[in-house]
Image 1 (cartoon, rainbow, N blue to C red):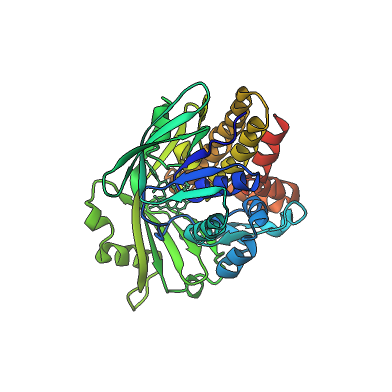
Image 2: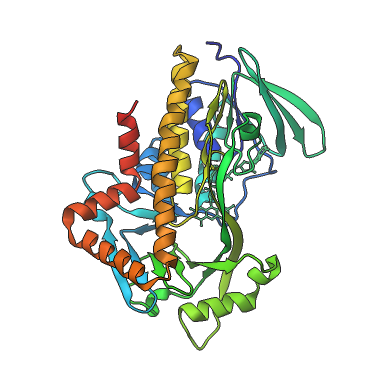
Length: 399
Ligand SMILES: Cc1cc2nc3c(=O)[nH]c(=O)nc-3n(C[C@H](O)[C@H](O)[C@H](O)COP(=O)(O)OP(=O)(O)OC[C@H]3O[C@@H](n4cnc5c(N)ncnc54)[C@H](O)[C@@H]3O)c2cc1C
């Protein structure tokens, strides 16, 4: 197969950057096209699961991420009034991974490290400020129409196109893939504060999901701040959702204190739970948020996207080295199954555990969690699934 044409990768989010680095490491030229003028530093995902850290080791970035991040050896389900319900200990999977913990490290840090690495590679062309607007394919290649920041249009050619262009993916639309699922009724408000929640809850884990029939929330500690995530009524205006008054009220509700909370960042976003009808159409592929989006309760979206990128790059490399084009469908079978059966199911269940109002159902969830942590085998099985190690092994077995 002709590899002199580059692989066009649309979107320099974490998924596009991982795929681009993997392909150039295999000696395959890539052109990475990014609409933004530079890499954004906004506050998004920050949880890295053990197998993702294992995978990223090959780029030599894991130690730097650990140095800049915060190791979280446990995570917790709590009840807002009763306190800790179940504390999961990642040391129990120490024989399955080099990194038996979750790492809290803002995703932009990984993006910057991967971009710095890619810039050094002769096989990589990186075009910031360039938006893909249409894509199409022929028998032996693809074409993507792009527009630069000054409004100039151009068509670039390649052997394949990878859509890592996020939720609004132009490549997914060009493939004619449906994006079925739902948009969650609430907006998720994420704020970060300098207040140390261990003062209020001495036994709180660095990652804690706090259930409540009226108002659940999530607390996540990073190296410098605590992040709190609250569901907010989606009928409110954008300004109201992130207003200082609302944020202060919500934080005082989480833990009442005499002083006001000092806020460092605030973000509000709509959350979708959707999976594309297909990930591959001839020479067009999608990965990451372009292919699947889910609620952030479990930190699986970014991690699942990075796992896609590893599978996609390996499969594409096989095809470029001579395997049949249809081999790409294996990538779709494997990774779409994970998105549907693991990521969507786990994050939906996490949301249900947090916001279920019916007392008997809440009691049943809690009893189940308590049984799971008390039983060594069940505890480990649960961690293998929620850390996403099991899904990688299961799909490897279904080749
Ligand atoms: C505001 C916000 C907060 C979030 N918070 C959390 C969280 O707390 N926890 C969590 O687990 N997940 C969170 N997420 C989700 C997480 O950030 C994503 O799962 C992750 O970024 C997916 O990576 P990606 O590379 O697939 O897509 P993205 O990170 O979305 O990257 C896509 C890239 O493609 C570029 N692009 C898009 N269209 C085009 C085009 N037509 N041409 C060229 N370039 C294009 C974009 O500029 C972007 O750089 C959040 C997402 C958002 C938007």
